[in-house]
Image: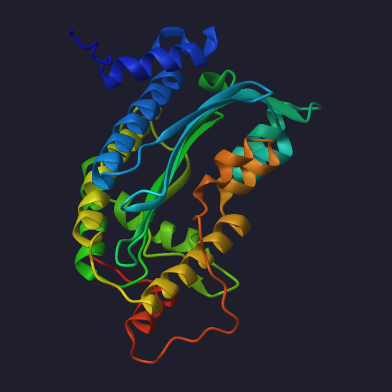
Length: 341
């Protein structure tokens, strides 16, 4: 008999988002609706590419709802051939945001001042946030971890009051130094940046190096990539196009690197070092990551927020790397961020 083909990704994404948005979020083909639809499309396309690369496990999808309004879809692949854990989370939430949460969500004094002025005597504002975030943790110590997050914050009547912004970025966390891989990753994002603004790459690369600092260790989490936040300095349509291109570049920036290293030979000692770096990953996410702290403070879904954590990690007391070793070389990069291009 004939098999029914599932509808194309675009159609699947549009149908889901249609059901998740309120009527006021969809008026005049709004940016809220288009950002959310694109995030869902990217989630489906990226998870499909990762499943293909893994060749073993598939993504399980969870639907969840937020008490204050909205919800999301979390897709997680676990115990795969190539990936220990890979997750991509979509979240479309709305409701009332306490002013205290706004100052966690943004570091921009202008945005915070604007929000306070708008709120007046009330300590909360009606908001809408659509976001997609992901972390991929491969098994092989020579295949790097990758993270991305793209989000759009919008407040009611933002056309008039200007209270909206975009944030995002894609970054790489290897355990061992391979300059060719890092140049490929950074180069892919520099191309995207250059297409939109010649100043973006230099600015957002430095921002990633600053943002992914594990301050108490004096190290970066990885080798960065790009990161931007509180972005509302130009036409929102142009920023949306930029973030859309960044999302479309996740697969070409990352999967060739994993493809190249997924079957590399490694020792027990190299696996332990990867686990130590995973420990650093956990430290950064729980202490400094703005998405994590914002999510936990606004009553987000804990499983989705902590999806970014690796399945296994290691903390060894007073661990020292051997001088001149590959581990020492990698650690030097984390302590002194480099320019790759």
